Image (cartoon, rainbow, N blue to C red):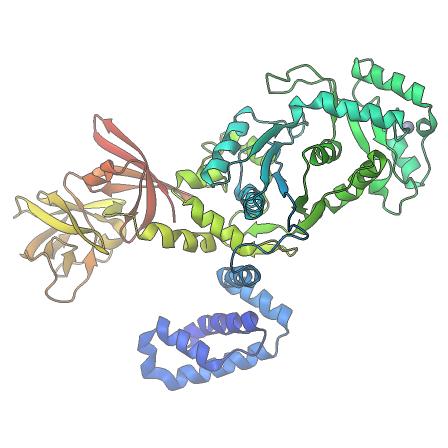
Length: 570
Ligand SMILES: [Zn+2]
């Protein structure tokens, strides 16, 4: 009973956290009995153990209960988080504020400095879904005006478009900010003419001193004519990087230093990876400026943004006031953290890929949409996953297991079944010429596949480890054998019936002429042998029985035989 304590604690905590009350004894008991039917014999002890665990949990406050559950069963905590947010948005998304009768325009605005990730999928799906709900417009805008620190990746533009299509979120309009820089200059000029912006020559440290003391720098009071002249000099390359910036006048005495006269443009004498832009510009808008101008020009009615960008909105509102524009309605949402990936920066990932630590942006270890697509995920599962979470200000911690569960429901009904054994060990069947197995292609359908084998089969090393001389096992769908020896592994057929007649261990196998299969998984690469029909499933998601779902990624004919590469789904 003692080794079951942690499991009891896990279910009791789950029940307590889920409903915010004392754990229900009968719920925990039921769950334990479902997992361990043999405990019925020991019901009394089980009941006592459950009672004791419940007592202990009752003495903890809510916060400690959540922490304890997070520690011993993060997947259950994650499940609760998903349920909590799902309850707020059981059918689709909640209504947008004031949207009735209004032409809703929403956008997703990534920096294409890497491939879209699961986090991007959330932005793509929720924004496009809202546009669809109100028969509005969904814009994909590339905020790509940082040619240095977040330098765009040329391929990523197309990848984003592919990913949007894949997620059934095709944008109605695509905007590339780096191709509209002249437009931003026009507004900079307008602001200068209004006396709402100025060219500042203070070194960053000097300006910080002024700012921290709520004092204007000397450049703030320059005349409009002077400023226009400086701006033109800035544009024609007279000033070097860091020598001059264009600042928006805000409230220099604002209680929040981050809002005081922020930088809208800077000098960067760098090229841009897009050939349409190239070396055309030496003055680049900051994201706050570029996105603020675009959000207005594109007629956005609603913006959903991370709550960490609250400051951006406050800065941008000064700009909107100068230009006499109304700010779009904004909703803030918290971050979604996937347990398996932790903190994740596109720039760092890009460096790791360039160092060769990953195969590419679609490496199965990565949370990019390209990787998930290659692993055979259904876009519908990703859509459902994010829509059920809705738009909440809370940070949500989830596990990939939640997404796997959603995806499994969809792939399970279609995926055909095959045998695959990893780290194969050869079993010799000396008396056999050939044997044919008739196996179901899918447990829900009366369709069969035939697997022919000669006088050997392959077993996984894990199954092999359980064998000993004299043991009888069933080779699934094939026959019953008795192990003669294990070194080398030899067996004799004792029953050729393809359906089991008595209870005994059933194991998977691969035939004499099996093909080499390499499975690329998030946790590494596994190799083994599979049945030859796997080679006919190129591009499809199939299930390797007792192993998991995989997508057949490539099939190659080599001198040594057919070789299949599969990406592990889950
Ligand atoms: Zn200055």
